[in-house]
Picture (cartoon, helix red, strand yellow):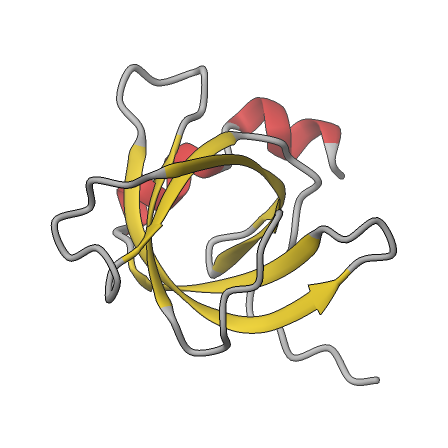
Length: 114
């Protein structure tokens, strides 16, 4: 299979809060998980319920190197149910700034993943 990703992925586990923007426009019902991998273009997370392709999630990704979480929106681009009844989501950022995406990939992370 041909690699279509624009940015490299890094095996990083950051705590992340997420909510479905369409179901909760005021973003009051956040759920918690961790990233499975991270890139400038998106993240992969494992959750315990199905969220349909195309849904937009608001994310608050916390990197312990920074005091404030990265605030971003991402589209669900793929969904995969695992054997242990968890769900993997591939998320592509629809709203994130370059400075914010830099906060996902600190120099320490980049050095350890080379």
